[in-house]
Amino acid sequence: MYSERPSRLTGAVVWTNTPSGSGPGRVLPDGCMDLLWHEGRLLVAGPDTRAYVTEGAPSAWAGVRFFPGTAPTLLGVPARELLDQRVELADLWPAAEARRLTARVNAAGDPASGLEEVVLGRAADTAPADPLLRHVVDALDAGRPVAATADELGLGARQLHRRCLTAFGYGPKTLARVLRLQRALGLARGGVPYAETAVRSGFADQAHLARDVRELAGLSLTELLGRG
Image (tube, rainbow, N blue to C red; front, side, top):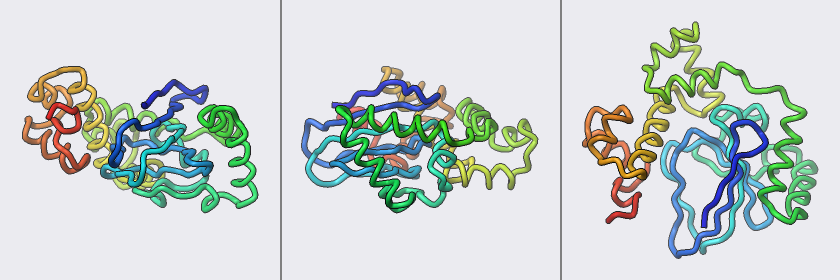
């Protein structure tokens, strides 16, 4: 079962997931990075460009999902270095610090709450992310073209691309595509017909929606929604 709640860290979400069925799990691209707890270990999930499929027997996970673009400042590593990866925290931070924080989370009654406390402590000692990044996310999520977004922010196309690589792991066109996928899934899960979903989320047509879902998620939209 999956559940989530807003974190006390602005824009972040605290979540837990204990799968009830068998078979692999599937994490879809969403423009975010996560700090994860799994079987007593702390890991960092980098930004995904395609569905991340989990293997092995179903087991409990907990995490803090950061608002797009904010994790690299907190974690001290550019997003592009973690693209499509799950990495042990000890590979990113000094080993002694990673061990201390892992022990702290494991000692907590609830790993998700323990993770949140770690994140809040880190945020208190870290400068906030560039506020321009929030404008990038908001503009692209509203369907604004990349060139228009760069102009609105007073940036050249190359400047915007470089900032996006550091903050999101990929360029603004890929970020826009991922955010569009999430908009479409939200509409379709709410019962909006596929053709209308395509138009409202910014696709050229339903066929375009179907291609993007298949490429990014590895399944058809019907399969994702469990309507097959």
